[in-house]
Length: 463
Image (cartoon, rainbow, N blue to C red; front, side, top):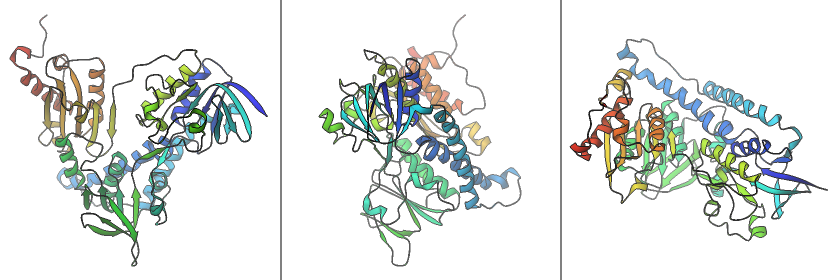
């Protein structure tokens, strides 16, 4: 048996669903093919359940300030109840996604797709001929096979835990590992973090990275940076964690947070299209059209390994869906990069990172938040902000920060960078007192001062 469609979409995650919604505006002759779990990575095992856990941990950690606030009494944590709450919230988020999936009806095909020709897929023994095909198959956590035998878990497994261990090692301190590790430490669990790099939370600014390490050290029992981890069974029980630098400990559980691997295995891409996938799909896709080379194939979402962040993969899907139903692919300008880790304080990287600006003539304005008015009121006196601007024009280029409520400054700066605003332009904006935003005002004024008196204004315009 075979069928013909205008567009076949492989994958029903965030990117695939956005692709489907875009395609349906132009044609109803479309199918959505999905082999794995429904409900999107974000709702099931990513953004949403992790934020529930983080919020519980953050609220519980506030107890350390109760005595100063005049709040009396002690609190305890029920770890099993915490995980039950996380799963209940997670199931609600997944349920909302499934409401949309269920509306797709007979356009939704459960099965694994494989290319047999450039425009022909085999699914459940049936051939599907499509004018255009969109690959949105997502990604999965990286797990060394020898670690799996030891019972090491990933973020995909973590939220299924009915209870939490007394001790855990987090291997990999990118955004996911840093967030979960800090949250568990605040819930009273002994946490050891191991990272091959000297940086945490995807930071590249050495000043902000130093601040982040200091902050995480308050909640992790140990932070071992710049070294790989070796794991083995401990005869006395648990998993033994060792590093090349000689550190060693035994923990009840290990969470591998080593990044994610794109799902394009056994799809026939190399054979049918004659492409080399040894380095993934990233260099083979136009990020402005989402087209794979010059083939009638588009790729969207985490499988691209380009920007694995929800709003970015949603944009991937919209672009791929738009182009999949047109004869000529249209290139779209991508949004200003914005990444947020929901640690406490929050890590935010917006626009160009410190590493990306290496060698350019920039000016840096910074502000610490230890003595900032609003953070003192909130008893959250920690963090640091660094903003980057072009020396010649004063145009804002990017920022890295680890500050309380940094998500708001991150969004504000993203808008300013998107509209190519200068430091002087932004200084015309009022900064209310007392707010965290005043810290940004200070950092921008520091840049203005470095640009020279001729470029400094009063922050006001003559009427």
